[in-house]
Image (tube, rainbow, N blue to C red; front, side):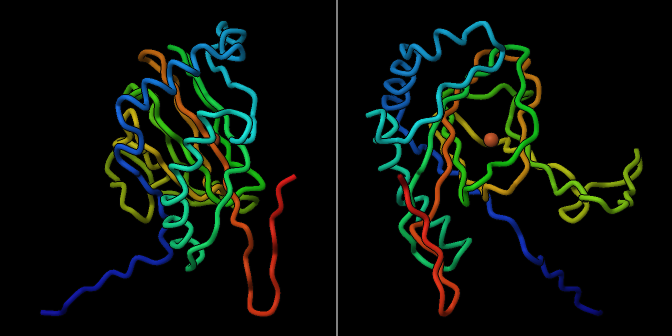
Length: 210
Ligand SMILES: [Fe+2]
């Protein structure tokens, strides 16, 4: 009998850091965020963001930045094969009310993006990753009632295991969205991170903060 081997080529990593924040730390960050004036002003919108700031500008963000360093180093190793020094260059908070959604997007000028879940997400409003959308070429697909989704033809992947207190890291180029929230308030903190430098044999690219 012939043996069949399937080689999974070029997978994309998404990291879940389960219990990144303790229950108490999650409560503390959530309480501080609810008191923040940016959030209060934006409460009529179904999707509210706070201002995008550097972690050093907010003690809670600074603490999250320090906590995330180990995960960023390990996830960065998967992407670049080296333990690099990573900097979170910006952080912000998202609050999605019932009926709100987040359109599909990716994060520019960043290599690793992260989401810290401060609440559980309703089943309807989980972060969804989309496979690349076929730029300017024609695309053929075979999707119908009798077809099956495999790891190779799938167009979407739902981060269904993220819970309150978890951190998710993903490559910043990945397209993602949050569908319409049919449940209660969903609060997350998002961030973008850059390595100190990348080296390709005899030259180096450095990323400097201001
Ligand atoms: Fe995003």
